[in-house]
Image (cartoon, rainbow, N blue to C red; front, side, top):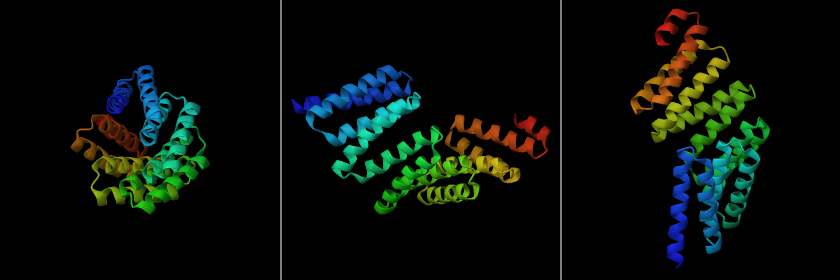
Length: 232
């Protein structure tokens, strides 16, 4: 029955996500592929697009960038055919992330620009937070630091408006990183301390550890090695 097969596809997609989180990449890929086949047989193009995106995310995490882009391209075609702007913006942003990791920064900006325009058109403020942040990272990687700061501040301002603590912390951490790259160590220290406090408030141990390391770096570069030792 269709209902049973739909349920099986959803279960397989969920299993793929669990395997991915646990680092079982082969099992995740197998579950996602089985889910995808069922959705394709049922003609459920939107759900098939979601699974293709999951496969793109998985293969990006595995460092298999060509395969990741192939899955994203297939998801993109479905999103365009269906006319789903939210999925379309998400896939563009994901593709930008792959190009960024490949060092193809102009291509990354091109795809994040497409994502940005769609999110602006549909008023997706939460999505804009991530896209502004992604563009900021790309700009910093290209050593276009003024633009990187501008985009990251936009991300932070919007995250504060919608009250998203996770992305507030990430944006503050990114500002600290950019300030370090530009030799503005006092500003980097201030942002790193804010980032650490936010991470501690959320109970995010990993992010707090990263922020503490950044505090040590900022102190050391500021000519305060003894204080850096205390934090370390």
